[in-house]
Image 1 (cartoon, rainbow, N blue to C red):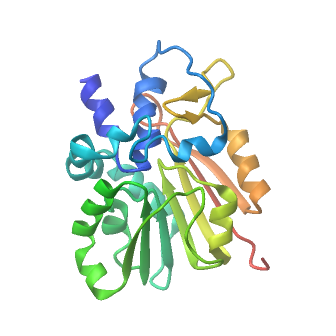
Image 2 (image 1 turned 120 degrees about the horizontal axis):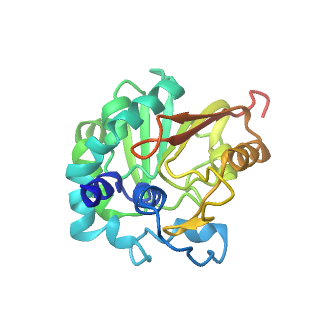
Length: 246
């Protein structure tokens, strides 16, 4: 059961990055400390094709996760993100680490334009299937790329999401237009000083760390809350807004 649960939570391109670690390290105790990453940007590559954990988001394993597991395992999270973001019909939404496009298909059908970014061709192929009608209509776009250097113009979006995916706060801030909103989900936050600082290819941050990173990037109205409780939930949801005067 635990092995099945672990696989169910691992889902979606860059999305798989945090998700795999959530149950594998944070929920299944006893794993020893991992070596520190060379720098914070290292996390943006470990789940990409050829990365240390790239098999979770690519190839046969990635296809199973994308098509079968992710939409079910993350349905409740999608609802929480949609409620926090309060998407409107005139929004232009960027989903960082979109994986197979399940959030965009389930919660953003009414949005004027959606863009999904992911480093995994496997995940984006599945997203093409889910968003086929919108792609044909020109109201959706899928892009291969990294959250470390978003391939979009300044102020291009009114809303940004990163669900179990890495986020570079300054880049998310840059691509939002003034007044734009961001929602980020960390499903394995560090809850005490005794917990490991690195797990499954990423540094782990506590609530104060997340608040500091959002505010240092320029976001205001930063809100941090938890969704549910461990071991089956307990994700940290962070949201913020780019000042209207930016």
